[in-house]
Length: 277
Image (cartoon, rainbow, N blue to C red):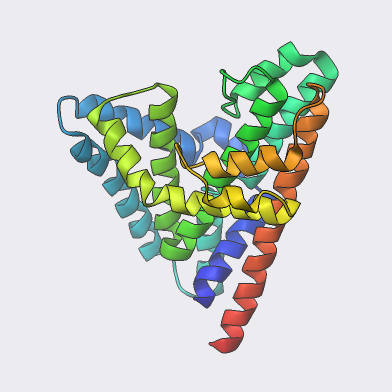
């Protein structure tokens, strides 16, 4: 387990310090972009097939490709560094922090209407009448499925686990946002129920530990995988007294403390497992 903990920690550190270069994203896209394109291709090519078949054809090549890439990575320190760098591209700490700051900054500099456009990149719930609550809940949701859940999958399956996690969460989010009621959407939801949902609850746990509140919500009902994390976030921050960017800043601060707690735990587990091994 020492390797798994070290890989997850190294990927997190690279994600926090370097992230995915914006210039590279503009030039060739990001892994999330590639997965979104692949999802559209598979859904178009498998129209008329069962949802399980479509889901298999979507996920299997992702896992096979990630596994094949890892097989080509050399052993030793340079190989570990390469594996950590590749794995970090499926982590979302720096990206989430930047998107959250964009919402708060746009609100502070230009007003709430301008902040709405930035909030769309977070996937804020359009049915929530208060922008601040919607943005805070979205930060918690993205922390759960773009940070916490991938960490769990990295510990289990390395790069292939991280790629599988992001591919499945992207498909689930796409189906929910489009309000799909297809066999594919049902297949995705069924697989998420026993994979992404349990992993995403770790996001709720880190948020609760970072705020020392709302621990009961960790085990609450989850109509979607990120629901427990969203509940913990909103309960920890309390009710919005005034709809302003300070609430979003508070959500960002809580997310950062939760992410730091997760990374600190990974560091302790890495050292402990190396010592015991």
